[in-house]
Image (cartoon, rainbow, N blue to C red; front, side, top):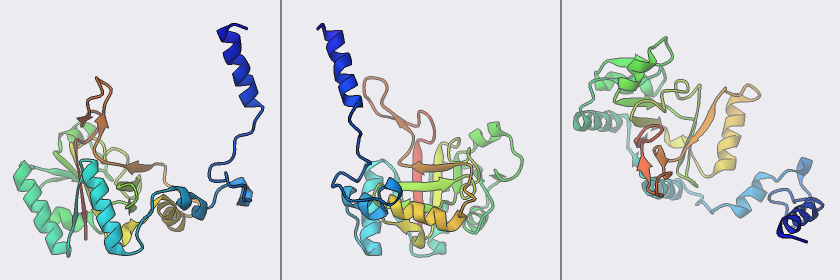
Amino acid sequence: MNEREHILARIREALTISAPVPGSHDGRPRRNGLPTSADQRRVLPAVGDSFDARASLFARNAADLHAEFKLLANPCDLAAELKRLAAAEQWDRVASHRGALTDPACAALGLPVLLTDEPYDKTELERCPAGLCACDALVAQTGSVLVTSRSAGGRALSVLPPHHVVLARRDQLVADLPEAFALLRSKYGADYPSMISLITGPSRTGDIERIIVLGAHGPRQLTILCF
């Protein structure tokens, strides 16, 4: 038997063995054959039960991902932080969408606003130095921001402006992915948005000589402001 035949024989042998459902390696029965949230949590990194533990973990993960996370005391601090960013980076306008968090934030900035839930020119969106959007959840376990096309002003707002600024409430900080998806199910039911995305740090690539480059395929900066 030559090497090619040996490899094909190994593949045929492997195909005769059924792979276990993820999370079911201990042989316990699963509902509909799928692992439960409890099963998933057994193999995922642990997350603390308190808000402070979750916020601390999210902050550490965000820092590792080259994202900036700030836990603010109140909406007044949010306005002050946005004005600081605008002055430091010399924003002349921003992109955003209508919402309970974004409307007062844009008003506080006092800059021209391109709204993505109204007809807009994508070239003009690219020219906006920052995009402000809301989110569905912050996931402490991974440092990710969970957004949908409904919560984040469509698909392009979180991608085209070079600085992506996420506005979140403290009650949106969840422990892990099972809790995040449970939140989505409770919020949208069977009527899911057309786009669901987990944003884990700013855009990056390591295609060339394994050197990480930020902003290659999207925003090079990600700031998460939670209050």
